[in-house]
Length: 454
Image (cartoon, rainbow, N blue to C red):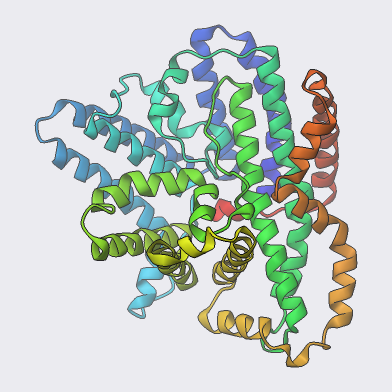
């Protein structure tokens, strides 16, 4: 499904752009709205109805909240329905398992977490008076369904694009900048994430009880690269596509692997999600305004919810609690120590995030324990060396490219080697990358999008 959706996007884009720039200004939003529904329906034909329901329901609730006297009750109703739909599709089986209920598998609509959070941010902002209610359904429907960032973010607040829904312009230069950003994201996803992802997939199939430490570390490192280039690559694609149509989406990643603490990491990773939880959960709970104990409780609640947002499984809950506890410790005293030595901070952050990815990537508490045990079981250090060296030599160049890119060195090198006046050179790189990625997608069926399931 993911493979066909990406290929569909590549071949869908050219005719869409042609139609979009030919039709008059007043028809552009309609073209994008219909195109977004078609794109979503290509991957999930029946669940496009859920998307349409969400658009109609939240549009109506925005009008209701704006007009009625009991605005709080209208907002509670809106939140209850939105969260209810999300819980039904995403967490029914998980909740039933608590009570030993029957297995009840429900297919998860792609991107439901993303567009539900966008809808909630809109109605809450209308309630707060932070944004004006949208009376044009086409504008609101486009905001919720806009295909560049519909299925994997970034989460866009309505107020950030409200003016652009009414009026936006695209110049030749801004279009090509968007095109270049889209191609860069596609390369990150297809060439780096997919390739390194094969190594993690292979190692994840091992019996962890006998997994050599060298392969355990190599495996989780490959996953950490895969998930970063998978998700940041999609965010780049979304931001680039948006710019091609005149939209300016906020950045979603800021080189998180250069961080010197877990706190800094989460200021740089999935910025739109962190912003959402801060604005709509942490601050309404009281934030840090009600004493240290209440602040710590608020942080734990937010991070448990962040873990659950990523999936209905105990390993995601553990992952969320892990970061909640870590950030509480850092806030209390550890940050002050880390700030004194940037090298130690970088090593600490790298290890802390890597351990977190074990919780995130490995299913089942027993298997998580076995994987951690394998990472630190150096008694069999010689076992698996042949496999380790073979995989390291096979993926070594790719790892070097991934590390250089993830730490921002490639961007600095590019800026130094290519003067600003020769910016058109990057368009050649972009077209070359697009051709390579298209060939890669047609030739290879391994093309998972990790964040589609969230």
